[in-house]
Length: 406
Image (tube, rainbow, N blue to C red; front, side, top):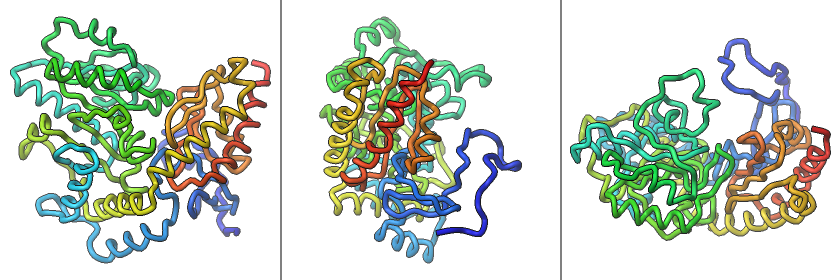
């Protein structure tokens, strides 16, 4: 398939230069494949960065969205939006929590969580609430979420950062206890169940359980950012559910709308009634189109057993990567292959950003995060055969890169 207007320029002269883009413009997609405007086909192992849950042009999602477009796209929150209640009820059911606030992005959801924590503290008489956050975390690029993020590179140039954060390493409960000892201002612990941008770093299940206990003992909010690792990506609805715990606050976005911008903050009883009318709001959050996308995404996921597919195909993909990179793992050139379900990271012993273009040249879309980690977050409809294709394209490229002189 060819098009009359091939995309040539790597950077538009009229768009702010905020992304290091590849010289690729995507035209359309089907399932786990996309095509650029020049007709080149790619296997999509990035899924819009864990957004395209149902892949592209899903035969049930697209007609539902077309139906909604013909009815009403947006109405403000002065009025009730019926599908807000439908989607909220479903998220409450899946999470074991109690109430939901809808927004449009993961950043907004995380910002709302930080506001909830501060209001929780003020309601208890704490004038300068503090929130525990983590090394290598990523929660967004607003001034507050940037301050909660654990990446000095992306914070540089935007100081002064927002105060009120205590940073600790992941999976070290003793470090957390030491950092918060005799501090009456701590109100919450905020973290990703699996760090995404920080390099696909999972929180250990025992650590999550210990943290849940500590939050209960000290009356802190346990706030789990499931923006990237939630919505079935690991084989459960939310990654923390592997530990058998329930948080007090859970931001969601990315995969919730299968490409339509949808964000949500799910709250348990401890946090559900902190916000009062006037404390928080949004123009676009919870609009009818976004809510229809969320409702239909979950319905299709359930009917298609996509959680089971994510767990099964993800386990096969991880095992196949281990086999294909066995020599590199043994030598230490590949440090680790980690993650769960269809959220996997291949940690190399050297920077590997060049792999993004090299893979695209071979018809595979991936990303590299934290300089050395190949991240795979494909649509949850990925088949076993498509997982094998990822391995067949990607692993020879990794092996060749690792053999290059430093």
